[in-house]
Image (cartoon, rainbow, N blue to C red):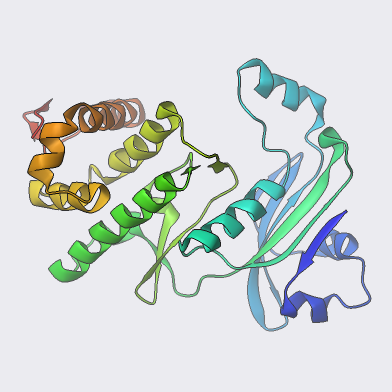
Length: 267
């Protein structure tokens, strides 16, 4: 069995079986399927989020393996992802409690409790409203810096969209980490999946070319003219992946900073 409790839950669950305590938690349910439930609850005067995983069964594991996907079989992946982000200096959720038992992967029970990020707004929502130009420039640079830090450290998110960046008290937090992968080096497919997904989610954010060049400069660490000349295919591939996702989602061509009458040009 694996168990981690921070100072809050060490006190709150003293003398209790953590797995029994988790099973008894009730609250505002966000998702409930056969093998997992996600909910928001209050305990000790604070707001927490719980993800409680039950065994996914061998059928689900085999189904994923047959299509060459590693199945997410519990909360352990999210716990390790949080610890990795903390180690590389990317702000994320605070893990307050984590537990895992049963060596059989098909029947493994696990849970993770994270603290609420107070008064948080997703960047997807932030991008829909008018914000000061200085804040917009800072957020673009910070998203680029987080992206580069992840990828330089062998981390790919797999659900890398603006909605998974939360802005709280002026600071960005990256969330929804349960599918995150950590390697020594990211395969190209997953790098383009991350960057293409981020670009797809920003296509309706009314970004100017200058905004996009600012992101490219912050991500690459080079003047955008130099980066686009020497690494043009990389950015073109990101644009193609993003546009493909956009057409799949909305059934139409995107209109973004490099579009002209629905036809994309590459700066």
